[in-house]
Image 1 (tube, rainbow, N blue to C red):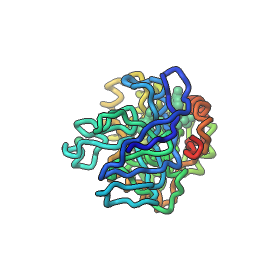
Image 2: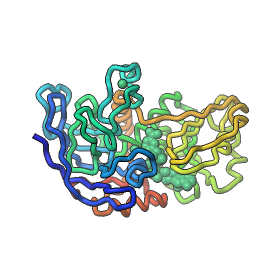
Image 3: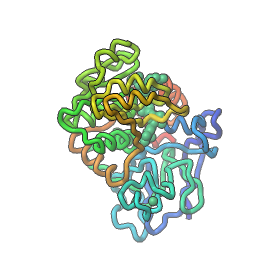
Image 4: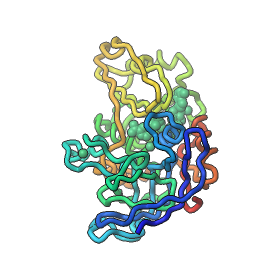
Length: 347
Ligand code: NAP
Ligand code: ZN
Ligand code: ZN
């Protein structure tokens, strides 16, 4: 039997989200049904709900920074029991057989991972995300939230946290690595916290000086406004790793010039329009330009344990569902400190 869940639904790219009801699939043998407690507002939810990216099937229920409590488990579930504190991130299934799935990089499944929303599940039904009161997910794609992190500040770790943790780990950031984070929003502020906890020397490159005090409090050693051209002179050739979280067009060549010999700039922000850069910016100083997308299940669980061990969670503003459309506008205006999280009790 399916179960009904309350949800906030985007009917089209141009209409505001509105309350409604959706059906969650019957609990399969390997499924976990989760009572959602909190869900973060990721900028990707806004890109999707506003039709910025191609291929959105409306109506859509977005949300992939989900935290909650297990309500029921299928007959063959071994990893979870009712009452467990759990999370769900950006994908809820994958083929489990391709080399990337076998390597624990399910987000890069060769058959295409099933996204938490705007995708089609193995049951042939469209997936619906976490702006809802419950969700049913195969236990292999559910994460355990350690006791040390409360569920409101844990929710954004399921996308923003892993999206920053993964490149920081994969590019070997540790004590003394010079790391710059471009854009201090949901992703960026988690990047600052995690990079600082890894021992890196962290610099924030933000549009303005407005968030300077916060950045230093979260662990950054320095902070520069990208609106000031002097920033690019002072920091030329300085960083080992730059992570760009900005969702808009940026001056890629300008930021590449800030990389040291063999430095890498990793793109995690996903602007709708193509970026461009000169070959010279890469050839000089043997620089690399790379990208990164979320992280696999194993690394996401590792990230949650790392955050619990270091007392890290997101800086959140908890809102009721009725404020979602206002919150979308505020994120677009960079007016968020630093993640909106919806209280699922208000759907
Ligand atoms: P966010 O909270 O809106 O943060 C983005 C930050 O970028 C803003 O706070 C702002 O920081 C800066 N920014 C925004 N507009 C700008 C502009 N026009 N010029 C320069 N800087 C600007 O968004 P988010 O949730 O962190 O997501 C950021 C991007 O990452 C989105 O494109 C999202 O879709 C993408 N994303 C990718 C992945 C992945 O796996 N690769 C995962 C999640 C999200 P300052 O005010 O400090 O400049
Ligand atoms: Zn996201
Ligand atoms: Zn696969």
